[in-house]
Image (cartoon, rainbow, N blue to C red; front, side):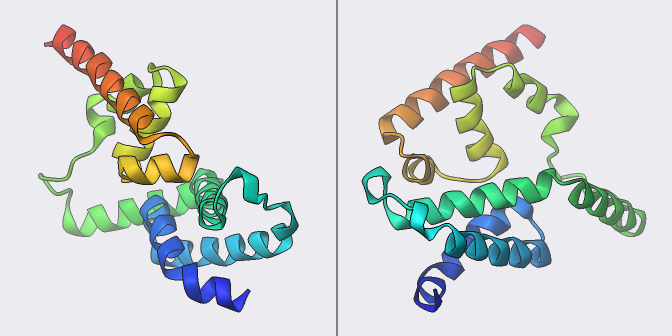
Length: 159
């Protein structure tokens, strides 16, 4: 386990941090993920993908579970209120929810939605998505392109 941790913890921490956005939460999620990896190592199947891909999927799922948890949402809202009370909201801060982008993305087909969520809201590259989800890179690019076409038609109809 120590060898796996030494080899992959920094990279996995970066993936988790991109999702949860808070250092302390990312550290907790990474620890939980490594416990889960350790406890379910016998479930790893070499025929289904690389070890790193399996580990990154466990970490990503743990991070998503963490941000969906009620406690995480409460903590984020409390921090947002406290931070905004002192500093004000930055005028150059982009909030996709303000213009309804999340609602538009929810109307995409599930495959397009997954790619857009991972690219634009989680910050993954198309290559990272392809590797992590065992989807051909060309398929990821096609799904992203078709989703952008659907979204652009929506924006044009609102203009």
